[in-house]
Length: 512
Image (cartoon, rainbow, N blue to C red; front, side):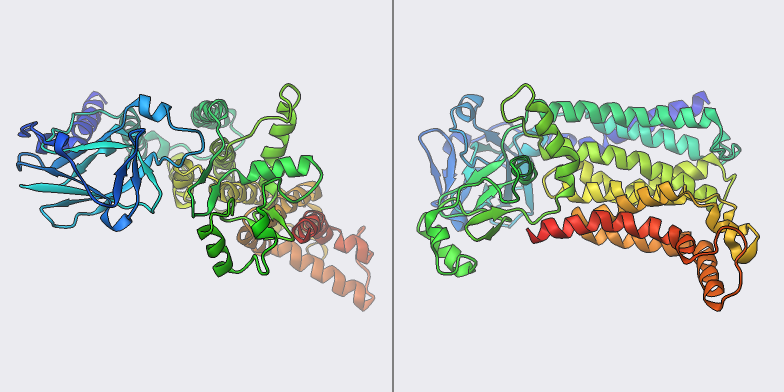
């Protein structure tokens, strides 16, 4: 056991200190000399009075610096905090900038540098004479770069997050190794010990989620960007929808320029481009414009689940309420998805292969989370991730409720035409599952196809209901309470009626 721990420690150290710090070792011989003070600005970049760079011509937007070949890396020096602090609110200053480092006139690879990640400011450019860092951003973008320095040494760094992930991988390898005790312990969903263990394991991402959501709520700022001659990008759509619903209407309380409202065909792309060229603003990107008002064509369910309640509750002590940022909504939705993804996986295993080992169960839970693209959604917590995260949650919750509506052995139940298989179903769970799955229509509609899982899940019950209806139609008696058509149809009605209760209002809202 001690040898395994030591081996795992050595692996983590080698990966983190050697493999993840290759740039540090490759740049040890860097001279440190730099002609950064003599950066040459391309004619497509212009230094403003406040110290920021403005892109005036994207084809000639570059910073050029001399190199002596002692290092394969250059460092992009951001402007000072004083400069960033003096930038007016609403200015489109990019914190993440796409660049391409050309070494000795050989085009490099496109990459992104971020002011929030100091390591990303080091860009590889193996040059012996000159490095030209091309800024690949549209005209009008404000770039917070002070200079580019060549011949630099990349600092040695240790990432706590990366080390944590490596340790987690080592723990999983130890738990899943051949001969591990987990392979000898069968799944037992009635075991209090196994339930408590799962709860403890889920507590860790739960605490991380609470911290992330709290930080996002405290630091929430409007995400609206505009540059003259371009569309206005506003990523707070769900909050705008929440405010509109609380005010009792579907249209959004956003400014509409008179020129756009009075245009002969405001829906024409050419017309809008001309309005932008004439300085008309704001013309919102990814919003629907109709009859002189802006609308959001994204599903309304996430707004009803999170954004409306948050603004309504916070309005008790803040006039008008507070905004919930997408960066808080996505982690919250994804954590609940994580919980029910694990519970659904366990329920499927219990149905298909009972008493399988805990090692196999844990492997499948990890696989389902990774295969669902959840890591990307945890990383990319922007507005576009909200409906996808909501649909993942609703789909897994709905399927989990459906699978819990019937006893695992119900398919083997005997009786008249399989009537016992129908009687064993829990109608409340069927209805609740239908509500969740139908709500996908108001999130990411394509997820509603999970409703077809009802056929393999309830095939014995479907056959039994068809048999009952045939018996009633033929006039033969049906023993028990299933003597009427209404009684025979109560199970499918428990699935369809709740779905319609959700879908019909969503269709009506969409029409409005």
